[in-house]
Length: 295
Image (cartoon, rainbow, N blue to C red; front, side, top):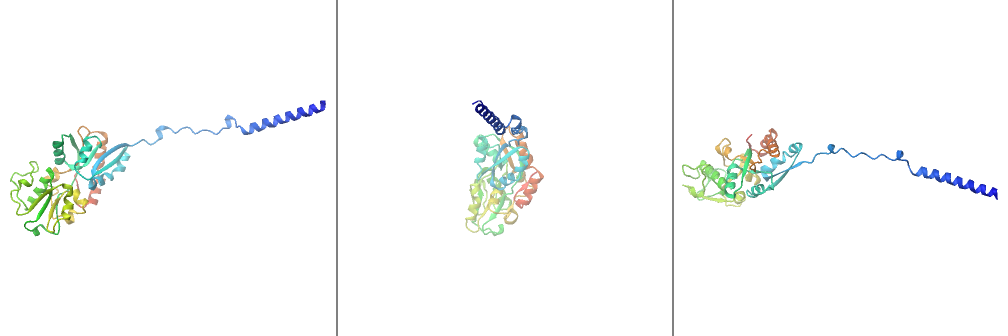
């Protein structure tokens, strides 16, 4: 009996030792546990870019803006270009705070819009000039224009004046002696239309109306709308404004902002990017004289 108890005790002790060894092998000690990676230093994470939302006409304004996206990203700004196909919404969106800036218009139009809508938008910088041109449907030279021919021009205040002055420059109509960019004129002020039918229509419809017109019609088209319609100033225009003219200075296309924002850091970064040598080269190489840098 004593011998039997001794054997049983020996077996129990042996099993205990084995169990202890098994437990030790399956549960690593704290010193053996895999190390947890320390969280990355927050300062090493890339900083979020500040949104910079700019409204623009598709051509050339949005294209020029797209060319400076990387430059602005390097300065900490995420340039977001919102494309518009009219001349009203970019200004109402800017006035309402939906945009930080817009880039599609010249100063006379901006001033006219402010006066008509009670807004307070200002120019932050002049960027480029788009020469107005006269284009024809089946007309290769203005000398071919026949009596009674239709001449289509843009109807908004400032662009109508500009178009009429260009027609007078080319001897197609006569205006009052004191007609000027500053004073402004409309088709109602034409003193002598030389037998032509001058029609003022919405600016963005001029190219389409010319293409759908009777042969022998001509039109005065804003530079950006001419580009969108596939016209080249150098190859297709029958006449243009001179690049060193009063019109070139007066009708410079500007970056517009809400009054008080023109000296903000983000707007100054935008202006610096747009008035660079790289943008000047981009404009020269891309637009074949339809767009001229003014810096």
